[in-house]
Image 1: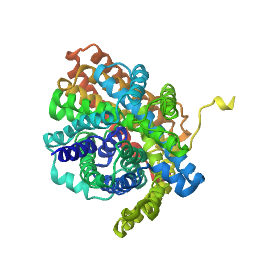
Image 2 (image 1 turned 45 degrees about the vertical axis):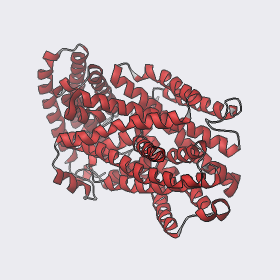
Image 3 (image 1 turned 180 degrees about the vertical axis):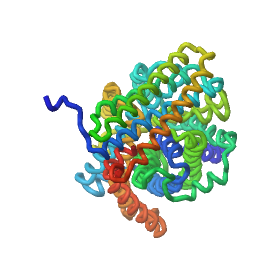
Image 4 (image 1 turned 90 degrees about the vertical axis):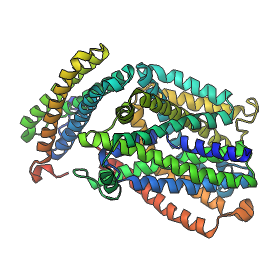
Length: 409
Length: 138
């Protein structure tokens, strides 16, 4: 019974924790402009994150060590550093976006400008990273993030033309008058949002924090195989709601306030309150995960003591990294840069860093010395290789598309 | 001194900038229109935030375009666009003032004006999009 509850909790937190500010904003933007014509990218991204999360979770369960720890050891300091710099840059940018996202969500609740709120949010996030238990960070926000299911309910209440939605989902081209290049750019952004590197770092480091062993591989796989696809359903529901409400108006989405409006229109204030709870939980949870991921990656690369289970004075350098990354994130937000624009940039740069992040995981997952009998099978390697090709194409296309389309204008 | 002069883009570039600004302002107008239509389903601070952010977003878009000196053949068209964007900005300011004051009685009139402005921007966007090929190729 206890094991079943653990599985259920893991699946629920995987669903609730799947969506972050990048998913919220990008899915809503894509839905409003392109309908569900890019839903296949979300599905592809979900399969990709399942493949690489399973691999990194298995590595953590078998070796008892997290990603960066093994990447440096297996591929050497130079490759490890390249991996660290690429992934860390994106994770830090995502951290900025998530803290800004929490502040934007609070602005929708209290009406106070986010510029007055983000310092308090940053300090609160840091306090939680410093003081709260890992299980609280993982479970509380993950469970509260389930509130975003309200988008699925709202979609049914909006009473869309389902055949039109279905037609949009299978039309693999941009609706008029959108250009192919813009459509492709948003496809890259959506893929980057679904496969954000920090998700894998947090997942594998979390496995080490929770002391996964070989016997936990089954539970881990269940969480990944059930939780992530259902989290993907939330992403598609957000896009579909935006499509139904904003596409007929020809309006694009630039703010978090617009993202929640379809829910309010469909379900009134109660629905909106639930959506706001979901916004806060999703962004706050992701802020904690990205903050921790910066600490995890740097500490693991340099071989420092790290983790929430280790006493603060023993893992002092890990906690200093958490503090410094929070200060840097707050410093960037203090420039009054729009958090939504930071989010837009972070998902595209995520796409750029994907091969650098995931290739080392694939190498380690194929190493018999680390993995023993749990090394990747043929099927898994075939799938991973297909994804490596996709990741490389996406990474190569990201910046040219960004410049060509002027960030999707 | 030349660094202080506004940029003079080519015709295509101005057209792309204009379409982007009209699109941004039009989105802001539509969002506020939608929010006012459903104001009884939104919390006060939420409605206020939507109105304030729409006004900011439209203002930024208009300012960006007005900082670009249009190429000679587009001077007249540029004046039309600038005028339409300025009108939309003013309307969004009116909407924000009414929302902050919780002046529900003004909403019906504002919705009508926002609808008209949205239609006007839409027509303008279509006209610029449909310019002859020699001036409209991206």
